[in-house]
Length: 486
Image 1: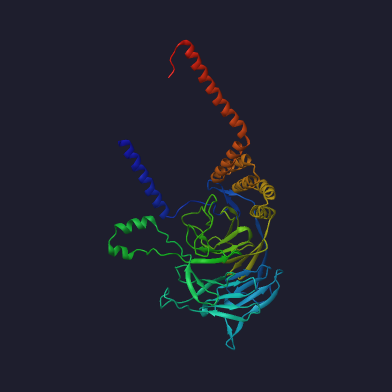
Image 2 (image 1 turned 30 degrees about the horizontal axis):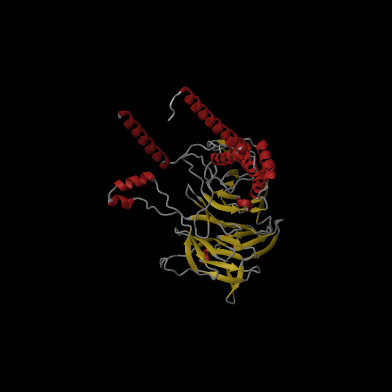
């Protein structure tokens, strides 16, 4: 009894130590100062990885022939690869084609018969029909222009019982879905994204961030006096830092806090992001207590549920597949090509990446390496149901990077879809994918039972028949001996 009490005390002490450790800053080294390309093993160790992207080109306003950019804050790329650069300090939008040639500059529009301009705009979104929405932050409004850059409507300070009278509407990011509902991220709004109808009327908040509670501070709050509690930090939800929307209308959003700092919101505002990778998507999972976790400030969603996030703290771009597996990372802070000073936005042009640096007023163009192209296509092939192609592409990625553990799981999934459950189990075991291993095992067991059902039933019936014959024989033998049988 004494021994069991000691064990309980030891467990309680360990839990308290863990909680204190978490509150004091978290994990240790993540290979800080190492190369810009790496991955994480199943065990959370930093392992070497080939570069998936390489910086190839540096663009600025002067080289583009539009004059120097001044604190640009956002990018948007349309489906036909037209590029919109929000040059905030110059209160304009520069439009480029796929070859980075200027096609238009939007710096004003007609409003009530007069020329109107922007003031320190911070966010831009372009629809499939080339309608342009601008979060005109300085003017405290969202401006909606059509494909000819003519005014459609202006969304300004909403009137609602859900908002306090002193609410100051400062939109900084905006997206629109196919039903023409507008979603706005605004300064100081902790209740989630602001949803507006197609007519511009405020309807509700969606996707409020969960409150992040420090367990140690919560413990002390329970023990403290009322006066002490008044001096402590209030538990309030965190603001979103950016958002994007995919072709299906799901909103992907980032927040600056560590934890579930990437979310995928459905129409009801519920988070449906899949987190079935070895670690939750969140940027770096290993870091020093001095530097702290990643601060995600932008997100870009491409086809096949692949999405990328930008970490402003270390200037890195992390990419994940739809299940939440970490695919690759590139970028960093510095002065050479491929590094940034103050990265603020990322976008894809095809498979190339554009990264906007606010301080330098530059756009860095990254292109895929053979490894990056192969891995991207492997994920896309599996998503499209092309199992055979995905299998071969994942094998190629493993040949280039044996440390990419989730590729073994990808091969297993491809084989699983083809019905080779026993072989799939082998790959799932190698990648320590317990969930899919169990699934493959159950299917393999059913397959074995189905294939050998006749043999199994023959054996069972034969054993039952032998058992009955033995019993009958023993009874007959006992009768001959005169032994009574009950």
